[in-house]
Image (tube, rainbow, N blue to C red; front, side, top):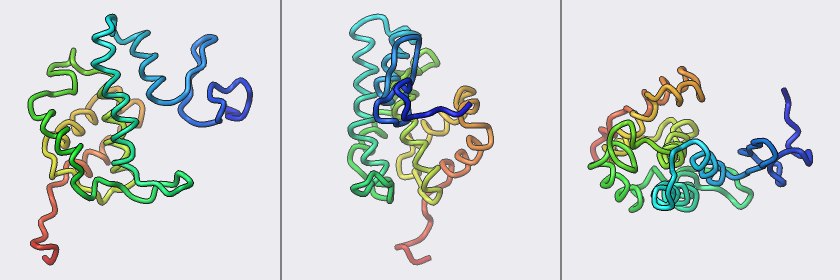
Length: 180
């Protein structure tokens, strides 16, 4: 079914995606949607648990997004900052060295925080398939783990997950001094 994003019924008054309607509640912006879903379904039942996840959601939207996607004044994506070596990704890579997921290790540690951060990281190779993340080995491992999740494959399709596994799994650039 087609959705009229400019209808007064659409959850975002700006007509933008993503937007969510849950009964009478209308939520827009990815971070707000993730926080709502985590509150409702994710077992984040204390302010401390919510804060642990929410800091990553806010970080993904405020810090990681502009690193991943360089936009012009009209919001068109022109390039990615992952061609460089942003300090924030060096720090993230170090944090992921000790943990399988952002909030710890083990399946019970996978959270909405990983959905937020992983989404941005995994959108980059969709738009820029020539990118290599091999310079951040723990981020690379993290991205590959997320691609193996059945929920990711259902959401984006097994074909997309396989394509991204090939791109993300690439070894680093073997050119010596950019010449060979």
